[in-house]
Image (tube, rainbow, N blue to C red; front, side):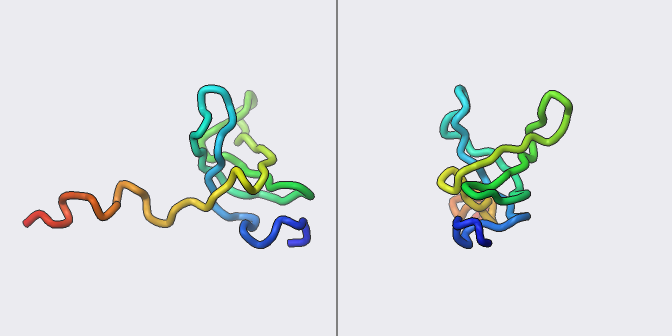
Length: 85
């Protein structure tokens, strides 16, 4: 895009956002990029709603974002059942 944020994220990307809220510091919340702005991205969270029951949206700086991993961590190679016979 032309917002100066580079090509790392795009609208409709599934992302995780690093929380700065008290009690949730260092927690990652899943959402979808819904738009870009001059200095950040607008993310709609998948599991959070506002007081009106609408999906919560927040403007987020790229340094608090990462793409959602393609393979959930619960399917890591350390799972014991992979080698059980």
